[in-house]
Image (cartoon, rainbow, N blue to C red; front, top):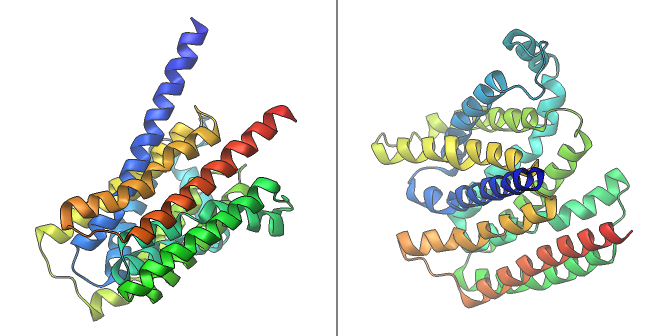
Length: 302
């Protein structure tokens, strides 16, 4: 009976991570569908994501006890606002750079280069958390370097070097964000994500006046979808699933994101990624999977 319950929990967790990765993978398509300034897109979707995460924070507390009333939660958020905002700056920059990169380069380039984040997290964790990278991490770094070479080769042909650079920077900052969340693991990591979206929305305000979006159903429906589902709900699903399945299994499941991202764009907009981008992206994904599996095996045998 207990094994059956545990199996059901694992299946539910696996499904949550899978749905999270699918939602994440739609970002490239919807960013391309909205014809307005990248900062307007980033700010709009972060505004709705912040509302969604704040609602979750108020109605589904991090720790279920009597101290987590709505008033207490608000006071806690206000008290820790400077720290949370400082920690959230990196992820806010990640989101902004990723949106801009999607406007400047192919969606496949943007997502593949951002997906170097796990390896950057290993390197930054060594520098700031004293978590020394092992053999599999260095091997993954070498493979990621090879993958980036192929992706950049495709980007040069498309004249999207700046977009590729911004996408790579987004990946580095994304990795840094994971290190920050790990350093604050005893607190509620969702609070950092909440403040990241608040920062992103506030920074984008001047761009709404400089480059006002054309009002229409496509704009509003797209940014509401990206804010509530592609960003907000995806984060909630990941937090739900990671408690029920091993981290390595979650990472392996999440690798569907960079694979599906250019697929949605290809089906909806007909944008075909270059063969060099596909090859480079495949190498990057293999590097991340190899590093995760090898680390998990060593952890079990140690």
